[in-house]
Image (cartoon, rainbow, N blue to C red; front, side):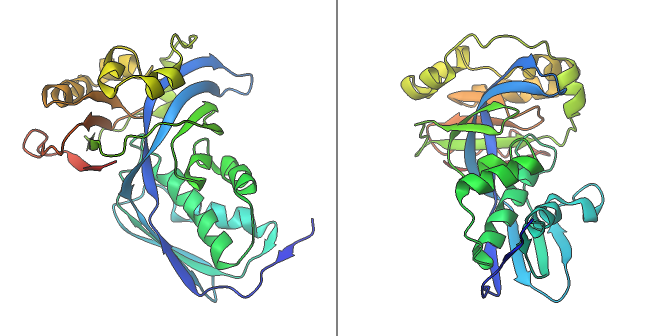
Length: 281
């Protein structure tokens, strides 16, 4: 393959990869490749990591903040660099990730870090890769990585990589995310799911009904089986509603739960001992 050469790069850049929540999550069928087809709405949330990419003499990756499980050399940020390196004459860089978003929490933090690495490299080295092409690179890295190329609400289908615009705005609403540091195995979560046809028009409900009406209609298919194994998560959801949430749900296959509120809400005392983040959407 012809390798594209970079023009004069910038020296370094910093970005703030956000997390996401799933508003509704339906497992509709199992594919021949072993994956499942999903229908969900991804919504970006400004709880962020900090990612720095610096031109260097040697490729390296370092991290601070929360502990990232696994081999550092297998980090998705390095995989993002290697993916672009196949097609572009990239010089070495130093990547530093300050991890804040909880890992393995259904919030897509690792996917966001990978996507933002692609975005930073594209900008720093003036690669002129279109968003459409960046979507393709990101989809290679993970099912929900493509969403973080643009950080705007999207209806996701397929494995989560088929995205379409959705005119949903929660601007002005407030969100509380609770992470109880319970590890939910994604494989186990899928093993306990029976795929089913989605019984609502998710786009219609999310865009035409008030947030308070979602409670009785917009579901996460993983909740029943995950809550059965971890009743504590069901209790967290109930507490969010008791505190006045318009809508509460588990994100992804867990274990984080979120509540959407009309006004800022201080719930630190109600969720003592958990990781809690709140802010305006």
